[in-house]
Image (tube, rainbow, N blue to C red):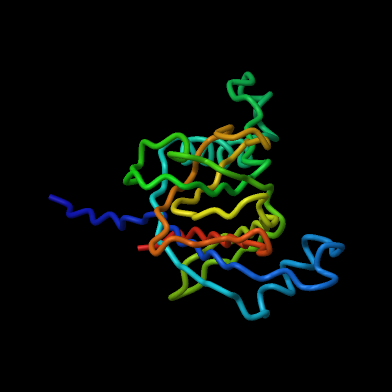
Length: 193
């Protein structure tokens, strides 16, 4: 009898929300440049939250991984697969307080969303798990809002609740965003033990 040990890996996610009071000159800056500036600027409020990875988004992500690995041979296999991607990637914020689950397909009460403005990756290493990071920049809202949830959608558009929800988190404590504050959402997803 042979003993087989399987190492189980999982995806985990983490979110950081930061508010920043608008300063002169920020309105005219390129979003990518502004995000780099805000990474080192003092924030008015910083809240971190772990998130739940959602089935629909994970399914889309794994299909995109598959397509990325076999696209060049798909025709030789009889074209069994359709081109599948993860982009466009949108971050969303909302005011809902319902507990999040792996079967969520949308935020409870989505208020705003924006396309990914920055991304990065850390490769796997001995003792280090691979990670992907996306950053989103939300403009100052027309009226103050209390952000209680956030998520990331794959294959999304600017339409509320559109796309495949990859991850969803309740934000505790909530984040108060005034009409004179920008909001950044940074999401990292780690594949690890």
